[in-house]
Length: 155
Image (cartoon, rainbow, N blue to C red; front, side):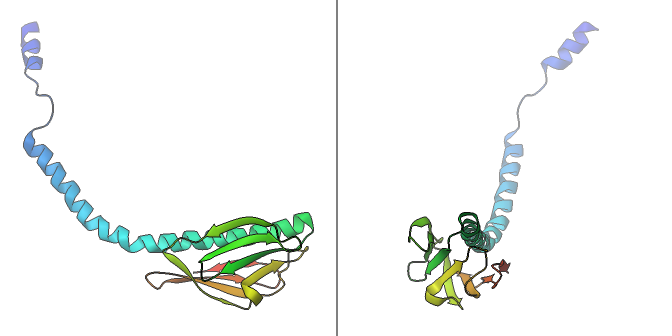
């Protein structure tokens, strides 16, 4: 009986046949052809959402600095250079500077004098306003700054 088992195991095939490999490669190719256009269509929206979250986070950061340090902090937006920076209003020291991803543009800014959002020592905003960002597909997201200092993202 031992010979019967050893004979059975000695003839096992190892690996895959060429046909099996070609089928797997074809399936991967078909999935890639279907998935690539979907990925390309949602990527601009993902980049827009990421940029909006970063900007809202930096606005909240400026607000928190104002409350913590009891000094006015501001965020100034530069539409032409598609960037913004956080600074301490009194000394004009820049705390953080960001260039927005090139796939996203600052579309418009309303309600903020000199395109600047400023926060008082209580965390309130000097002015309420909106920053509208758009991607290359025309999708927009809005960051709203309320008089209380509340920073809200609208999709």
